[in-house]
Length: 168
Image 1: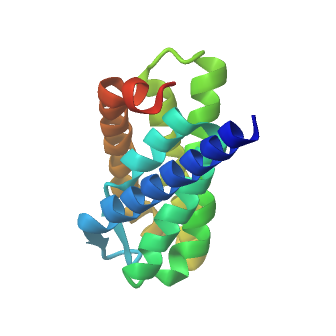
Image 2 (image 1 turned 180 degrees about the vertical axis):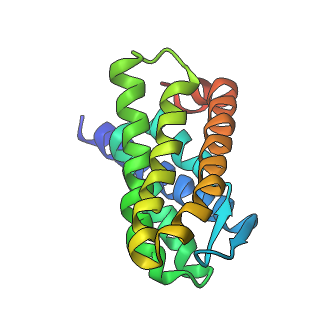
Image 3 (image 1 turned 120 degrees about the vertical axis):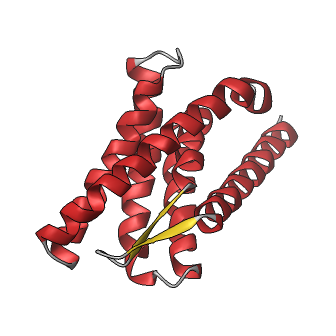
């Protein structure tokens, strides 16, 4: 009994580590700078949302928060890392909770889209205080676009791979 629990824990740690690495890489591979807020637009949200869908609330929060914050640090945006940890972590958490509770595991783009929009609004609030209202407004369309593209990609990936790979 103890051995199977140990394997499950080791397997879960390995999956979390791989998903965090993929999130970091997806965030870094395509990063388009945003002039107004000195941030950047990226594809990492697809992996944050996918993590919430397949690994649940804890996985969504941990992978979204740590994987995305690590990308901020590695790309030279360390001043965003604490905010990213919370915003992207909550994005993964919200997607997982909506998917499991409100949608009863019936795949719909809705939980993913809500998570992406939450992310955009989270950065909007932070950027009001970091910069000013006009700068935050200027970055909002790019962040919404990023969140919704991430939601679409995550939904496609989940439908194609999620059930098979993660045995959910």
